[in-house]
Length: 400
Image 1 (cartoon, rainbow, N blue to C red):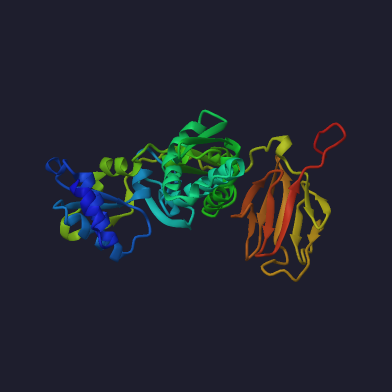
Image 2: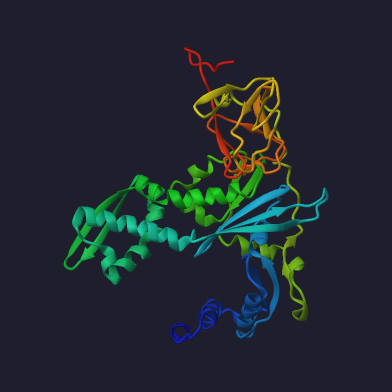
Protein backbone atom coordinates (compact mmCIF):
# COMPACT_ATOMS: atom_id res chain seq x y z
CA UNK A 1 0.00 0.00 0.00
CA UNK A 2 2.85 2.37 0.82
CA UNK A 3 4.51 1.63 -2.57
CA UNK A 4 1.26 2.47 -4.34
CA UNK A 5 0.96 5.67 -2.36
CA UNK A 6 4.56 6.58 -3.21
CA UNK A 7 3.90 5.96 -6.91
CA UNK A 8 0.78 8.14 -6.87
CA UNK A 9 2.68 11.00 -5.24
CA UNK A 10 5.55 10.83 -7.73
CA UNK A 11 6.43 14.26 -9.05
CA UNK A 12 9.01 13.20 -11.66
CA UNK A 13 9.86 10.06 -13.67
CA UNK A 14 12.74 9.52 -11.22
CA UNK A 15 10.26 9.44 -8.33
CA UNK A 16 8.18 6.87 -10.19
CA UNK A 17 11.26 4.74 -10.96
CA UNK A 18 12.23 4.85 -7.29
CA UNK A 19 8.73 3.76 -6.24
CA UNK A 20 8.82 0.87 -8.70
CA UNK A 21 12.25 -0.25 -7.51
CA UNK A 22 11.15 -0.08 -3.88
CA UNK A 23 8.14 -2.23 -4.74
CA UNK A 24 10.39 -4.82 -6.43
CA UNK A 25 12.71 -4.94 -3.43
CA UNK A 26 9.96 -4.96 -0.81
CA UNK A 27 10.55 -7.77 1.67
CA UNK A 28 13.87 -8.80 0.09
CA UNK A 29 16.35 -6.13 1.20
CA UNK A 30 17.58 -8.15 4.16
CA UNK A 31 18.83 -10.89 1.85
CA UNK A 32 20.46 -8.59 -0.74
CA UNK A 33 24.00 -7.32 -0.33
CA UNK A 34 24.18 -5.38 -3.59
CA UNK A 35 22.69 -4.81 -7.04
CA UNK A 36 23.87 -5.70 -10.52
CA UNK A 37 22.18 -3.57 -13.18
CA UNK A 38 21.69 -4.80 -16.77
CA UNK A 39 21.23 -1.56 -18.72
CA UNK A 40 19.85 -1.28 -22.28
CA UNK A 41 22.14 0.35 -24.82
CA UNK A 42 21.75 4.06 -25.40
CA UNK A 43 21.91 5.41 -21.85
CA UNK A 44 23.90 8.63 -21.57
CA UNK A 45 26.36 9.28 -18.73
CA UNK A 46 23.76 11.58 -17.15
CA UNK A 47 21.06 8.93 -17.34
CA UNK A 48 23.36 6.32 -15.85
CA UNK A 49 24.22 8.73 -13.05
CA UNK A 50 20.52 9.31 -12.34
CA UNK A 51 19.89 5.55 -12.34
CA UNK A 52 22.69 5.01 -9.82
CA UNK A 53 21.34 7.79 -7.65
CA UNK A 54 17.87 6.22 -7.63
CA UNK A 55 19.32 2.84 -6.66
CA UNK A 56 21.47 4.34 -3.91
CA UNK A 57 18.35 5.91 -2.38
CA UNK A 58 17.07 2.39 -1.68
CA UNK A 59 20.00 1.85 0.68
CA UNK A 60 21.53 -0.89 -1.47
CA UNK A 61 24.92 -0.60 -3.11
CA UNK A 62 25.25 -1.00 -6.87
CA UNK A 63 28.02 -3.54 -7.44
CA UNK A 64 28.17 -3.46 -11.22
CA UNK A 65 26.72 -2.26 -14.53
CA UNK A 66 26.54 -4.36 -17.70
CA UNK A 67 25.05 -3.87 -21.14
CA UNK A 68 21.75 -5.78 -21.19
CA UNK A 69 22.24 -7.16 -24.70
CA UNK A 70 25.67 -8.51 -23.82
CA UNK A 71 24.41 -10.05 -20.58
CA UNK A 72 21.38 -11.65 -22.25
CA UNK A 73 23.57 -13.18 -24.96
CA UNK A 74 26.17 -14.43 -22.48
CA UNK A 75 24.21 -17.37 -21.11
CA UNK A 76 25.59 -19.82 -23.68
CA UNK A 77 28.65 -20.16 -25.91
CA UNK A 78 28.44 -17.71 -28.80
CA UNK A 79 29.64 -17.75 -32.42
CA UNK A 80 31.92 -14.95 -33.65
CA UNK A 81 28.93 -12.73 -34.51
CA UNK A 82 25.61 -12.45 -32.68
CA UNK A 83 22.62 -10.13 -33.01
CA UNK A 84 20.43 -9.55 -29.95
CA UNK A 85 16.92 -8.16 -30.50
CA UNK A 86 15.03 -6.73 -27.52
CA UNK A 87 11.46 -5.45 -27.40
CA UNK A 88 11.18 -2.39 -25.15
CA UNK A 89 8.14 -0.30 -24.33
CA UNK A 90 8.81 2.49 -26.85
CA UNK A 91 11.38 0.98 -29.23
CA UNK A 92 13.05 -2.13 -30.57
CA UNK A 93 16.75 -2.40 -29.79
CA UNK A 94 19.23 -4.45 -31.80
CA UNK A 95 22.70 -5.06 -30.36
CA UNK A 96 25.53 -6.29 -32.57
CA UNK A 97 28.04 -8.45 -30.70
CA UNK A 98 31.30 -10.04 -31.80
CA UNK A 99 34.01 -12.30 -30.45
CA UNK A 100 37.19 -10.45 -31.54
CA UNK A 101 40.35 -12.37 -32.37
CA UNK A 102 40.79 -16.12 -32.46
CA UNK A 103 41.00 -16.85 -28.73
CA UNK A 104 38.17 -16.83 -26.19
CA UNK A 105 38.52 -13.12 -25.57
CA UNK A 106 34.83 -12.72 -24.86
CA UNK A 107 31.63 -11.45 -26.42
CA UNK A 108 31.73 -7.69 -27.02
CA UNK A 109 29.14 -5.12 -28.03
CA UNK A 110 30.39 -3.36 -31.14
CA UNK A 111 27.32 -1.22 -31.88
CA UNK A 112 23.57 -0.99 -31.50
CA UNK A 113 20.63 0.15 -33.61
CA UNK A 114 17.26 1.43 -32.47
CA UNK A 115 13.85 1.42 -34.14
CA UNK A 116 11.87 4.21 -32.44
CA UNK A 117 8.10 3.76 -32.16
CA UNK A 118 8.46 0.03 -32.81
CA UNK A 119 8.10 -1.00 -29.19
CA UNK A 120 5.56 -3.01 -27.24
CA UNK A 121 3.28 -0.01 -26.70
CA UNK A 122 2.93 0.69 -30.43
CA UNK A 123 2.17 -2.96 -31.13
CA UNK A 124 -0.48 -3.03 -28.39
CA UNK A 125 -2.10 0.04 -29.93
CA UNK A 126 -2.19 -1.64 -33.35
CA UNK A 127 -3.98 -4.70 -31.99
CA UNK A 128 -6.33 -2.73 -29.73
CA UNK A 129 -7.32 -0.65 -32.77
CA UNK A 130 -7.89 -3.84 -34.79
CA UNK A 131 -10.24 -5.29 -32.17
CA UNK A 132 -12.02 -1.95 -31.71
CA UNK A 133 -12.64 -1.66 -35.45
CA UNK A 134 -14.02 -5.19 -35.49
CA UNK A 135 -16.45 -4.29 -32.70
CA UNK A 136 -17.54 -1.14 -34.54
CA UNK A 137 -18.06 -3.01 -37.79
CA UNK A 138 -20.06 -5.86 -36.23
CA UNK A 139 -21.80 -4.25 -33.24
CA UNK A 140 -21.42 -0.46 -33.69
CA UNK A 141 -19.86 -0.30 -30.23
CA UNK A 142 -16.49 1.46 -30.00
CA UNK A 143 -14.43 0.12 -27.05
CA UNK A 144 -11.94 2.98 -27.45
CA UNK A 145 -14.65 5.55 -26.80
CA UNK A 146 -14.70 4.86 -23.07
CA UNK A 147 -11.65 4.75 -20.80
CA UNK A 148 -12.79 1.63 -18.93
CA UNK A 149 -13.38 -0.49 -22.05
CA UNK A 150 -10.20 0.84 -23.67
CA UNK A 151 -8.17 -0.21 -20.64
CA UNK A 152 -9.88 -3.60 -20.69
CA UNK A 153 -8.66 -4.13 -24.25
CA UNK A 154 -5.05 -3.35 -23.38
CA UNK A 155 -5.14 -5.46 -20.22
CA UNK A 156 -6.30 -8.51 -22.16
CA UNK A 157 -3.73 -8.39 -24.98
CA UNK A 158 -1.27 -10.85 -23.30
CA UNK A 159 -4.11 -13.37 -22.84
CA UNK A 160 -5.11 -12.91 -26.50
CA UNK A 161 -1.58 -13.67 -27.67
CA UNK A 162 -1.50 -16.82 -25.55
CA UNK A 163 -4.84 -17.90 -27.00
CA UNK A 164 -3.65 -17.26 -30.56
CA UNK A 165 -0.82 -19.76 -30.05
CA UNK A 166 -3.42 -22.52 -30.09
CA UNK A 167 -6.38 -21.17 -32.08
CA UNK A 168 -6.89 -19.61 -35.49
CA UNK A 169 -9.72 -17.38 -34.29
CA UNK A 170 -9.89 -15.22 -31.17
CA UNK A 171 -13.21 -14.58 -29.41
CA UNK A 172 -13.36 -11.24 -27.60
CA UNK A 173 -16.14 -10.49 -25.13
CA UNK A 174 -16.91 -6.98 -23.94
CA UNK A 175 -19.44 -6.16 -21.17
CA UNK A 176 -21.60 -3.18 -22.15
CA UNK A 177 -24.10 -2.26 -19.48
CA UNK A 178 -26.22 -5.33 -18.70
CA UNK A 179 -25.18 -7.05 -21.93
CA UNK A 180 -22.04 -8.70 -23.25
CA UNK A 181 -20.96 -8.12 -26.84
CA UNK A 182 -18.79 -10.66 -28.59
CA UNK A 183 -16.76 -10.65 -31.80
CA UNK A 184 -14.39 -13.06 -33.49
CA UNK A 185 -11.05 -11.88 -34.85
CA UNK A 186 -9.00 -14.26 -37.06
CA UNK A 187 -5.35 -14.81 -36.20
CA UNK A 188 -4.51 -13.72 -39.74
CA UNK A 189 -5.97 -10.28 -38.98
CA UNK A 190 -3.60 -9.92 -36.02
CA UNK A 191 -0.69 -10.91 -38.24
CA UNK A 192 -1.78 -8.56 -41.02
CA UNK A 193 -2.13 -5.61 -38.66
CA UNK A 194 1.40 -6.20 -37.35
CA UNK A 195 3.07 -6.60 -40.74
CA UNK A 196 4.41 -3.01 -40.96
CA UNK A 197 5.84 -3.46 -37.46
CA UNK A 198 7.43 -6.80 -38.40
CA UNK A 199 8.85 -5.32 -41.61
CA UNK A 200 10.67 -2.63 -39.62
CA UNK A 201 12.16 -5.26 -37.31
CA UNK A 202 13.41 -7.32 -40.24
CA UNK A 203 14.84 -4.17 -41.79
CA UNK A 204 16.67 -3.53 -38.52
CA UNK A 205 18.22 -7.00 -38.62
CA UNK A 206 19.06 -6.85 -42.32
CA UNK A 207 20.78 -3.50 -41.90
CA UNK A 208 23.07 -4.88 -39.21
CA UNK A 209 24.80 -7.47 -41.36
CA UNK A 210 26.34 -7.86 -44.78
CA UNK A 211 24.44 -9.71 -47.48
CA UNK A 212 25.16 -13.42 -47.33
CA UNK A 213 26.69 -13.20 -43.86
CA UNK A 214 25.54 -15.99 -41.56
CA UNK A 215 24.55 -14.77 -38.12
CA UNK A 216 22.80 -15.97 -35.00
CA UNK A 217 19.87 -13.88 -33.82
CA UNK A 218 19.22 -14.15 -30.09
CA UNK A 219 15.69 -13.02 -29.48
CA UNK A 220 13.96 -11.68 -26.38
CA UNK A 221 11.31 -14.16 -25.21
CA UNK A 222 8.71 -11.41 -25.69
CA UNK A 223 8.95 -11.87 -29.46
CA UNK A 224 8.03 -15.54 -29.20
CA UNK A 225 4.43 -14.56 -28.37
CA UNK A 226 3.92 -12.32 -31.42
CA UNK A 227 1.63 -14.11 -33.90
CA UNK A 228 3.27 -14.63 -37.27
CA UNK A 229 6.61 -13.13 -36.29
CA UNK A 230 8.45 -16.46 -36.35
CA UNK A 231 7.25 -16.98 -39.90
CA UNK A 232 8.62 -13.58 -40.91
CA UNK A 233 11.97 -14.37 -39.32
CA UNK A 234 12.06 -17.60 -41.32
CA UNK A 235 12.34 -15.49 -44.49
CA UNK A 236 15.78 -14.27 -43.38
CA UNK A 237 18.42 -16.30 -45.12
CA UNK A 238 21.52 -17.53 -43.28
CA UNK A 239 20.06 -16.53 -39.92
CA UNK A 240 19.75 -18.96 -37.02
CA UNK A 241 17.15 -17.79 -34.47
CA UNK A 242 17.26 -18.60 -30.75
CA UNK A 243 14.62 -17.45 -28.27
CA UNK A 244 16.17 -16.49 -24.94
CA UNK A 245 14.55 -17.40 -21.60
CA UNK A 246 12.63 -14.80 -19.59
CA UNK A 247 15.00 -12.60 -17.59
CA UNK A 248 17.96 -13.54 -19.79
CA UNK A 249 19.82 -10.28 -19.08
CA UNK A 250 19.51 -10.78 -15.31
CA UNK A 251 20.55 -14.44 -15.56
CA UNK A 252 23.56 -13.53 -17.71
CA UNK A 253 24.60 -10.78 -15.29
CA UNK A 254 24.46 -13.19 -12.35
CA UNK A 255 26.45 -15.84 -14.20
CA UNK A 256 29.21 -13.35 -15.00
CA UNK A 257 29.03 -11.32 -11.78
CA UNK A 258 32.76 -11.70 -11.16
CA UNK A 259 33.51 -9.93 -14.46
CA UNK A 260 30.95 -7.18 -13.84
CA UNK A 261 31.44 -6.16 -10.21
CA UNK A 262 33.58 -3.10 -9.48
CA UNK A 263 34.42 -1.04 -6.38
CA UNK A 264 31.76 1.61 -5.74
CA UNK A 265 34.19 4.43 -6.57
CA UNK A 266 35.12 2.97 -9.99
CA UNK A 267 31.87 1.66 -11.47
CA UNK A 268 31.91 1.35 -15.24
CA UNK A 269 29.50 -0.03 -17.81
CA UNK A 270 30.77 -3.45 -18.94
CA UNK A 271 30.43 -4.11 -22.69
CA UNK A 272 32.33 -7.39 -22.88
CA UNK A 273 31.98 -10.69 -21.03
CA UNK A 274 34.14 -13.86 -21.09
CA UNK A 275 31.83 -16.06 -23.14
CA UNK A 276 33.06 -19.37 -24.53
CA UNK A 277 33.29 -19.53 -28.31
CA UNK A 278 30.76 -21.77 -30.06
CA UNK A 279 31.45 -23.57 -33.34
CA UNK A 280 31.50 -20.99 -36.11
CA UNK A 281 28.03 -21.26 -37.61
CA UNK A 282 28.82 -18.12 -39.60
CA UNK A 283 31.50 -19.78 -41.67
CA UNK A 284 30.75 -18.89 -45.24
CA UNK A 285 29.44 -21.53 -47.57
CA UNK A 286 29.50 -19.39 -50.69
CA UNK A 287 30.53 -22.27 -52.94
CA UNK A 288 27.70 -24.49 -51.70
CA UNK A 289 25.10 -25.30 -54.32
CA UNK A 290 21.77 -23.50 -54.35
CA UNK A 291 18.74 -25.81 -54.79
CA UNK A 292 17.67 -25.76 -58.46
CA UNK A 293 14.23 -24.31 -57.72
CA UNK A 294 15.87 -21.33 -55.96
CA UNK A 295 18.68 -20.74 -58.45
CA UNK A 296 18.16 -17.64 -60.64
CA UNK A 297 18.62 -18.04 -64.37
CA UNK A 298 18.19 -14.37 -65.41
CA UNK A 299 18.31 -10.85 -64.05
CA UNK A 300 15.42 -8.57 -64.97
CA UNK A 301 15.82 -4.83 -65.64
CA UNK A 302 13.69 -2.45 -67.65
CA UNK A 303 11.42 -5.22 -68.90
CA UNK A 304 14.29 -7.25 -70.35
CA UNK A 305 15.91 -10.41 -68.96
CA UNK A 306 19.66 -11.07 -69.14
CA UNK A 307 20.88 -14.65 -68.78
CA UNK A 308 23.31 -15.44 -65.94
CA UNK A 309 25.97 -17.88 -67.07
CA UNK A 310 29.45 -19.08 -66.20
CA UNK A 311 30.81 -16.20 -68.27
CA UNK A 312 30.32 -13.18 -65.95
CA UNK A 313 27.66 -10.58 -66.74
CA UNK A 314 29.07 -7.15 -65.85
CA UNK A 315 26.60 -4.46 -64.77
CA UNK A 316 27.29 -0.70 -64.81
CA UNK A 317 26.82 2.46 -66.84
CA UNK A 318 29.97 1.79 -68.94
CA UNK A 319 30.91 -1.83 -68.15
CA UNK A 320 33.22 -2.42 -71.13
CA UNK A 321 32.96 -6.22 -70.92
CA UNK A 322 32.17 -8.99 -73.37
CA UNK A 323 28.86 -9.68 -71.61
CA UNK A 324 27.33 -6.56 -70.15
CA UNK A 325 24.14 -5.00 -68.84
CA UNK A 326 24.50 -1.29 -69.47
CA UNK A 327 22.58 1.00 -67.13
CA UNK A 328 21.57 4.64 -67.76
CA UNK A 329 24.45 6.91 -66.77
CA UNK A 330 22.40 9.43 -64.79
CA UNK A 331 22.01 7.41 -61.58
CA UNK A 332 23.82 8.60 -58.45
CA UNK A 333 26.06 6.07 -56.79
CA UNK A 334 26.36 3.74 -59.81
CA UNK A 335 29.87 2.91 -61.00
CA UNK A 336 31.08 2.35 -64.55
CA UNK A 337 31.64 -1.34 -63.76
CA UNK A 338 29.48 -1.74 -60.67
CA UNK A 339 29.18 -5.50 -60.17
CA UNK A 340 29.20 -8.84 -61.95
CA UNK A 341 26.73 -11.73 -61.89
CA UNK A 342 28.06 -15.23 -62.45
CA UNK A 343 26.92 -18.85 -62.18
CA UNK A 344 29.51 -21.08 -60.56
CA UNK A 345 29.47 -24.55 -58.97
CA UNK A 346 25.70 -24.79 -58.86
CA UNK A 347 25.05 -21.31 -57.43
CA UNK A 348 24.64 -17.73 -58.64
CA UNK A 349 26.74 -14.95 -57.12
CA UNK A 350 26.98 -11.19 -57.26
CA UNK A 351 30.45 -9.67 -56.88
CA UNK A 352 30.57 -5.99 -55.95
CA UNK A 353 33.26 -3.74 -57.51
CA UNK A 354 31.72 -0.35 -56.73
CA UNK A 355 32.47 2.56 -54.44
CA UNK A 356 28.90 3.17 -53.36
CA UNK A 357 27.76 -0.40 -52.80
CA UNK A 358 25.48 -3.15 -54.03
CA UNK A 359 22.61 -4.31 -51.82
CA UNK A 360 20.72 -7.60 -51.81
CA UNK A 361 17.32 -7.14 -50.16
CA UNK A 362 18.78 -3.98 -48.55
CA UNK A 363 21.77 -5.86 -47.08
CA UNK A 364 25.11 -4.56 -48.36
CA UNK A 365 27.27 -7.00 -50.32
CA UNK A 366 30.76 -7.49 -48.91
CA UNK A 367 32.79 -8.94 -51.76
CA UNK A 368 30.57 -11.77 -52.98
CA UNK A 369 27.23 -13.23 -51.95
CA UNK A 370 24.94 -15.96 -53.27
CA UNK A 371 21.59 -15.05 -54.85
CA UNK A 372 18.23 -16.82 -54.94
CA UNK A 373 15.06 -16.39 -56.97
CA UNK A 374 13.09 -13.37 -55.80
CA UNK A 375 16.08 -11.40 -54.52
CA UNK A 376 16.22 -7.69 -55.35
CA UNK A 377 19.62 -6.26 -56.22
CA UNK A 378 19.96 -2.50 -55.70
CA UNK A 379 22.96 -0.70 -57.18
CA UNK A 380 23.80 2.69 -55.65
CA UNK A 381 21.43 4.96 -53.74
CA UNK A 382 18.73 5.41 -54.88
CA UNK A 383 20.32 3.91 -57.99
CA UNK A 384 18.69 1.06 -59.90
CA UNK A 385 16.97 -2.13 -58.74
CA UNK A 386 17.27 -5.43 -60.59
CA UNK A 387 15.19 -8.56 -59.93
CA UNK A 388 16.53 -12.11 -59.88
CA UNK A 389 14.17 -14.46 -61.70
CA UNK A 390 14.05 -18.01 -63.00
CA UNK A 391 12.82 -18.85 -66.51
CA UNK A 392 11.67 -22.43 -66.94
CA UNK A 393 11.24 -24.87 -69.80
CA UNK A 394 7.88 -26.32 -70.82
CA UNK A 395 8.38 -29.19 -68.37
CA UNK A 396 9.00 -26.77 -65.47
CA UNK A 397 12.77 -27.30 -65.25
CA UNK A 398 15.01 -24.20 -65.00
CA UNK A 399 16.48 -23.01 -68.29
CA UNK A 400 20.23 -23.43 -68.70
